[in-house]
Image 1: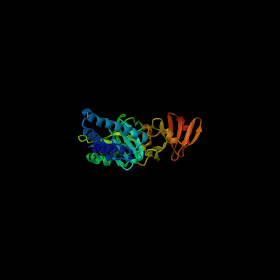
Image 2: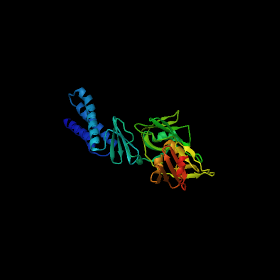
Image 3: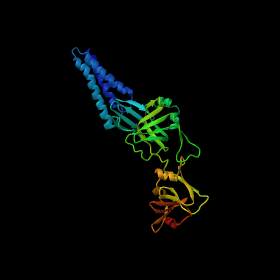
Image 4: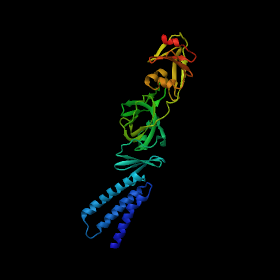
Length: 339
């Protein structure tokens, strides 16, 4: 009988210790540790005189001990954890969820998240992009498909709630729409909850790509919501072309265009981002572009503190901070500053 008890103890110890030397995720590692603790408890229970409190508390002590060792081993040595359940997003991204922490596995890199405080910690490029129109076409089905997964969504901002959240809705692009305008579908929405993210550069109708954990669905309001969210930086608004519309009837006078900007013989100027087209007046007022960005790397001519910036499709005569005149690219008339 004693020999069988010793074998039971040895098997229990092997089942507990063995998984710590296996550097890959498997739920069977957790089962092995649990089974090992159970066998050690049985080993004690078969002893003729065993303290009942030892039988109760030893498994708890072993769980806490092995949990602590597993945490330290994973944190310091970056080895695969045991006391976790894996949420495999794709071949590059897995999330290991434990009681007090989670681990982002980004390809072969482990990133710890104590107390579930971090937002998505892997590179957004590791996730496949989903269009907001597809996600919200059948929101309840989308929730069942992606529930408790990190997903990447691209869409247009329909509402900004301070620094706490933004909303995205299905949208339809109207013919000849400018300034990013689209028609939003009001029947469903995606709320992206934000934490420690600066969204001051984003406006309504801007395209945006977000990554977050899809946790909730409110059937009454048809609202999906993301947590642990980040915003993927994109270059959608970094490249643009100017489209200049000249006036049919030019009377050589300057006309007010927008704050501190005037035009002569120019009807309008558009910024074409390929995905959206904006009036330059709107973009300047909205902060989407600045004078400094427009004149960057342009040819400069200067007379009496009046600067003429020669661009490919138009010129800008800068008289002062409060007066900048947009001209066609053949015009050079410094006297306009005096009008």
